[in-house]
Length: 269
Length: 158
Image 1 (cartoon, helix red, strand yellow):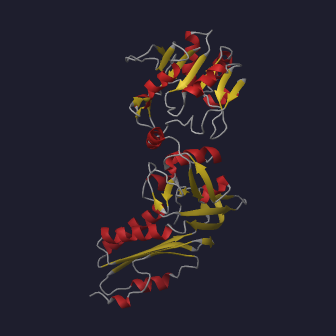
Image 2 (cartoon, chains in turn purple, red):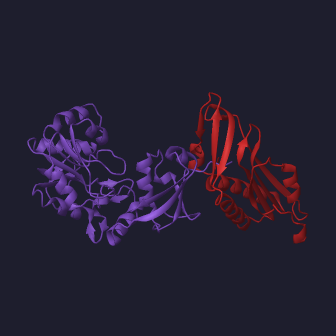
Image 3 (cartoon, helix red, strand yellow):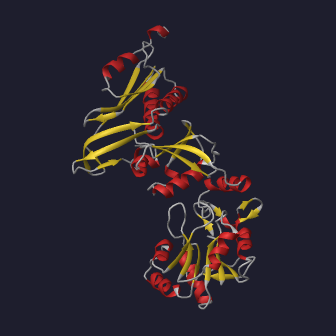
């Protein structure tokens, strides 16, 4: 097995190169490399087709401009069509060495992957793709169907469960950095939280109020958890959160027995 | 000359939420002040269409513990920011009919300019920052929680 690390380049939502963000004094890229090393020495970094920068590891260039994560995988199979490829995003700071070993040891079928415990969907950017996956891959790319989530669902899969609910939480928003730093500092601690949903959110969650036990550390982590579970149609930038009836920042740490309100865009007047 | 505090009716300088119909005449009377040469009044009405669809009925809901508090904060901010004497706002919740007044903002000042500017500021902030939501019923029977229009999300000019 060989591994291809997706660094995501300059993430528009994060406004920065995610791979260089530090959690617990280690960059996300260094941490990801450390996780993979016990499993294979053949680790590559996925880079743009015209990349000219220095990298700590060998790179595999995209075959075309901005092809998305599936384009990275396509370039990997072009590099070595006979190897299985671990395709892994660098922004999974809660992924453990045990999780990755589990993936490695259970390899079979077209793809070996995790079901994300938060929404029960197969996770495409932390999965081992067998050479047999490349035929479907080339087909979907030629048809310009580049959604990695749809692609993985079209493959014959081994689906595994990761060690903890937030194992696949990805750092896709700046608001989640504090969440991940706190989880790293203090570990996952269970808290009992009451959540109130308003307007469209109560319609989608099919409840105005729920009590739950969560290991999320901040409001952003809690929102990410319930967003995936209830399949909310709105994302974090459109939501306002309140703790005990006061508007609060997404970085606010959760305390046991907090009452949290999640509110969709206001529409008075 | 400012009237003595005991003469000031209860809803002046307050943001309130109510289920019953808004009595604009009564509210305007409460705002009267001999030092003020201008009262600007904005009425937000329930209209019969939204983004090309015919609206037949409408319901407003609110966060029961936060809406009035946030509205009051905005009203006080308006009073601080503009040289106005008084401001008042009322928003309705519950079931409303087409043509009903959904929200009223009143601002009073010595000269008209401040009252106009403050009123515009006040209603824009109320729309964007007070946790109130609108549930519309359309002529085809569909019902939907309404998102603020794109223009409202992008600027304060709507």
